[in-house]
Image (tube, rainbow, N blue to C red; front, side, top):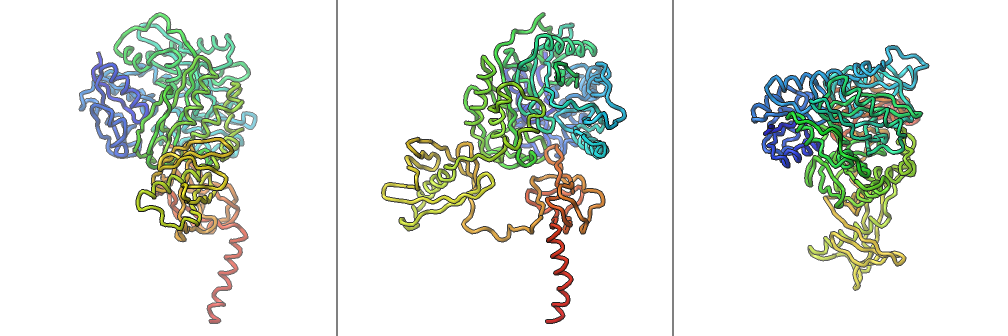
Length: 633
C-alpha cells in the first residue's frame, strides 16, 4: 500500500492530486522552485522540498533532484501530474530504480508513445520528411510534451525554416527536448479524444470521448464530455483505435488518445501517457476519481470488467491570466479574490492573495459544470463564470462566457478554427456603462467615513476611470437626500455595494477596490489621477514590454537605423512558457533598440522605438539644420 506520495509538479494539478491523497489517507510531499516557495500546492502538502532556482530546466525538469527529494522526504511513490516530466521515460525509470512506486504507465509504454513521431509510426501514420508546396498547410510540432508548446502552423514554404527554429527553441525550453516533426495540418477539424484506463491484469476501459476543439495557440480552452454529434460508427472507431494503441504498448494507468475528426474520419494525433488537464469532465460524467484509480492501479489492484455507465454532460473552461485581445498576452500580479458560485467545481493552484508570476503557465483555474444535458451544463458554466469574483490581473473570463454562449458552440458546430474566425467579435469591449458610476459612488462612501466630503455640495464631484481601453468621466452630486447622478437614481451606496435604478429597473453592483484597480461585478476599471503624470509619456512608436519576461531573440541583423516594415517581428519575449513576438507597429526606422538577448524586462519597459517613415524624415531634416542654427546664435 502506498503511504506517502510526492507530486513531481506544481500548481493546480499538484493541489488536485493532494486532495485525493488526503481523502485516501495518504501523506503528501510537494516540490517547489524558489518562485513557488509560498505557492498553494506547497501550503497544502504535508511536507515540501525546495528545488533551487526558478527556471523549469533547473527545477521541475530536474528528475534527479525530484527523486532525491522523494527519498529525503520519506515518500514511497511519485505522481508526475501532467507536463514537465510526466511523459519522460527516463524519469519513470529513475523513480522505480530508486525503489519508489511510479504512479503512471510503464517506462516502455511512455517511451513508445512519448515521441509523437514514434507513436505515429506505431499507429501506421508517418510524418512528412520533405515538405513541398502541395503539402501546405503543415503543422510543425514538438515530438515531446504537449500543451500547445513547440507548435507552429506553416502556410508558406518561405516560413518553414523560421517555424522549425522557433518550435525547437520553445520545445527545448518547455520539455528539455528540441525534437520537432512536420505533419499535414487538418483545417477546421474537431479535436476529439478518448480517455482510457488500464490495469496490470489486461483490462482496458474506454471512458467516453471528449471534445477539445476550442483552442488558442493549439492549447485547449474549453473541453466537454461526451464529444457531441459523433455517429455510433465513428465513436466505435475511436474506441477501437484507442484500445489498440493501449494494448500495443502494454499500457497501464490513465491515458488519452487524441484525434482530429474531419469529414467523418478520425485522424490519429498522439497518445498522452498521463493524466490530462481536462480529466474532470470525464470524472463528472462517469462519477469516478481518476487519480484515486491511478493510485489503485499502481498498488496492483484490478479494474472491474466494465467501466461505470456515463450520465449527463460536463463542460470545463480554463481560466487564464491573459489578454485575448492582445495576442493572448499573459498577465501577472496579485490575485486578490477568486470564487465561483456553488454547484461548479473549481480546480485551482491559487487562493486569495497569491501572486501570479511570470515563470510558469498563466492558467489560474479550471471551472467544471455537470448537468443532465449539454445545454444545461453549458448554461450553468457560462452563468457561473459570469457571476464569479475574479479580482486581480486581466483574465479570459469574458471570452469564455461569450464562447460558451456563441451560437456555433451551443449548436455543437465548432472546430479548431473557432477562434481564428471569431476572436475579434468575442473580444470586442462591451463594458457596463454604469460601472464607473458605481465605482465612484462606492469610493465616495468609503472616503466619507474618514473626515467627510470636503467639496462644495453644490458642485459636481468628478472621477475618471479607464475601462476597456477608454477613459470615462463620472459626475455626481451630494445633496441633503444623498448621492445623485443625472438620469440615474441611487437606491443604495456603500463602500462594497451600490444599487442603481434606471428606467424603473434596479441593478446591484458589488464593488471591490485594490489600490487604483476597481472591480465592479465582472467589470474591471482603473481609477485615474486628476492630472496625468508627464513622466509616463513615451515617444511615438515606442514598443513597451506587455509583460515581464526574458528577451530570447532579436531579429537577425537588426540595429538602430534599420528600416523595418509594419508587422515585421523585431524581437521575441518568453513569458509563462510561451514565446511572444514584438512587431513593428508601422513602416519606418528603428531609432532605438534597448534590449539584448537574455535580458530580463518588466511590464512597461522600453524595448525599442520605431519612427514612422514620415516622422523619421522630419527628424533627419531637423538634425541636418540644427548645426547651422546653432552656429547662427
